[in-house]
Image (cartoon, rainbow, N blue to C red):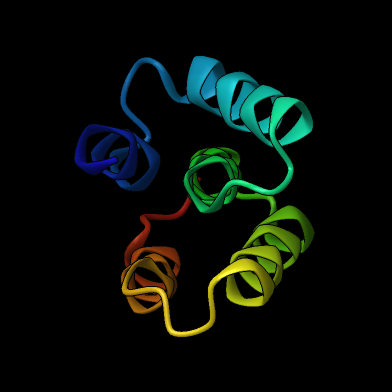
Amino acid sequence: PEHALRIAVTGSPGADALSHDGALARRQDPGSPRAALLDACGAIATRDEARFANALNHLARLQPGHPAIAVLQSAWTARPPP
């Protein structure tokens, strides 16, 4: 998760792959908080605000108070412009 978050925030090479993998993880295991986290990272990487909000809300429903929620919100705010 740390590596995925780094890619998401920096927009480094691998952002498109992260976006794809995050969406795939969530489709394959929609009940997994880890998959929701990866999907949120993919949304940050592609700067997709609607997808990010959806993934973050999904994570909060799956595991209220998950420590990654605050980290993801900070990452969304800290991401550089496209």
